[in-house]
Amino acid sequence: MLVIMVIVSTITFFISYSLPGDPVSLWVGDHPTKEQLAVAKKNLGFDKPIHEQYVSFVSSALTLDLGVSLRTRQPVLAEISQRLSATFELVFISMFIALLLGFFVGLHSAIRSDTVYDKVTRGIGYIGLSFPMFWLGMILQLVFFGVLKWFPLQGRHSGFDVLDINYTGLFLLDSLFSGHIDLFFDGIAHIFLPALTMAFGVFGLIFRTTRSAALEVIEEPFFKTYLAYGLEPQRVIQYSAYKNTLIPVTTVSGLSFGLMLGGTFLVESIFDWPGLGQFSVLSILTNDFPAIMGVTLFYTTTYIFINLLIDILYSLIDSRIRSGHG
Figure (cartoon, rainbow, N blue to C red):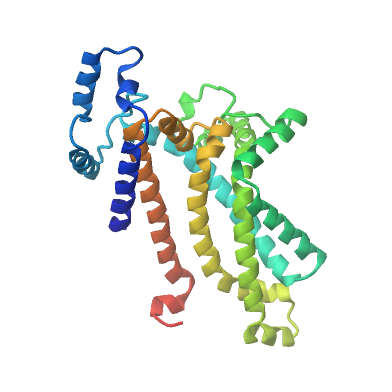
């Protein structure tokens, strides 16, 4: 984990350093004098050689000091903390939709292999894998906002004053448990389109993995033995076979989580969602060097941690892994 973080941070640092543009200009504002530029460059540490800047960055990062955003002039760690809840809420709901639909539809598709249902669901899965997220998001906006007027175009809510319910930062959770049902349904309406956009592509990946794993299980001797005793395929899947599909589905879910984190860059920009993805895009466009590095480190840490949890889940799902057999 540490090696991966060092490699990613190093590559990102030197790529960000070589980007065109002067990040100091973003700090001093429009029409600065040469003296102002020189002072700002010294204060920000950009006058030092690149290897010294890298050592300084690593030393600060080890103490959780990610610097100050040149665009917002706020600590990068504070900016990440402020926007994390919005991104987490969006990714969690998207992942929940994709897992719920992909897993159960994949199981039923395997049971009804080569039927009309199977062919239709496979087609939908391929479409989900083929559609770029940003294109799908814009199409959903055109259809559900522009034509049908069913869902709002962008934002996290309709501009309500939510300071009195901001306990966890998760808008849906806070509005529900504070009794503001109108805010809860308003949040559901706003999150529906961006969550559906992100879930649709991942649905295809989870669906195909579940279906393939279930088909392999159906060919196993124990499955055929249960069928020979007169049990329905659905009951065999329900009581035993579905557990054998959890390992590959868990693996692909971890990879899908990383895919969704990357997808937030475009989806949050399209739907004006106030999360880390939108903050990252604006930071890249303005060459906000500290913000780019901070967000990259955060995404890397999150992705590594998710994969660590998945490795731990393997032993909980399959006792053979825990005992060293199989």
